[in-house]
Length: 373
Image 1: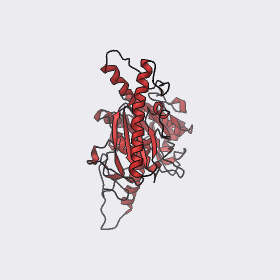
Image 2: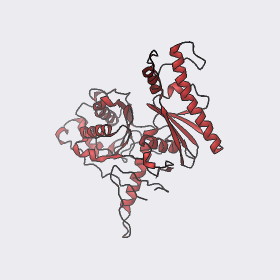
Image 3: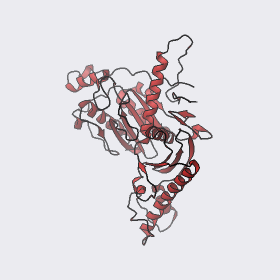
Image 4: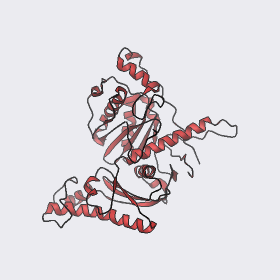
């Protein structure tokens, strides 16, 4: 088993040029580990930055540097979070800076809707000169390819300078991590967002059989046994892709929005309702059939978890009970970050002559949990 080395703490932020202002004084204190917000006490230091680059958006969250005593992965309370479309990635740094400034000013958690980025961080009592302190670390789950990773690296450079791009640790699926064992024939073929979701869900509901359904650009269905064994999954077009395929593949059917209400589950009496209800029924059928199949296979109850931005349109059409969760990927990234840090700290503390300091590069994956590959 290889242990993940925690990325060396970044150099403290130089605030000499702006030390005359109260904001800069607060920043200097924060960079030494005095961030005093919910879940991130003065002893804990600056938070983790977690980034989820999906097919449509780049989502981010700030998480406490040390797991709070009351932390629940089933309902994570991130210190700040937001999202931007890939085309608007340049606003990502502005969002993160604004969220971080809100923490330092003590104005509470800051959450930004997609692409909502203030021109300055003035809403939290700071101006555009605010400099984010060095984070505890940066983790990325990316299914959008090299352009998305480069966008994240450039965001880090904007916030902390050129060397900060080296802080980025990219999550990749492996044979085992954080109590989850990968059942794929080739474990590395599993998407990092799906891998993070499995880890987050297992942390949220340990000891329960889970069917994890994520509805986004694609709809993914994952079967996770209570002991952490990943049994496999399914991938289908998401609700929006289904609607688009009908519009593009036929001569007279309209292009509809997946967020439009279906109006019910009965047979439709208009073309618009027929399309919306038909696509919703297809999504619901996939979920309900998979849920029934997994319960029969395991011979025990299975919790159905709905995640993803398109989940709201489906939740009320399902005949099986569901639990909604809108932050499974960052919850999984947080679990990975904390365990990697704990493993790195344990490795650093070991000084026996027969021990060696095993490390991996920031973009590699290792499992510090028992039973890891």
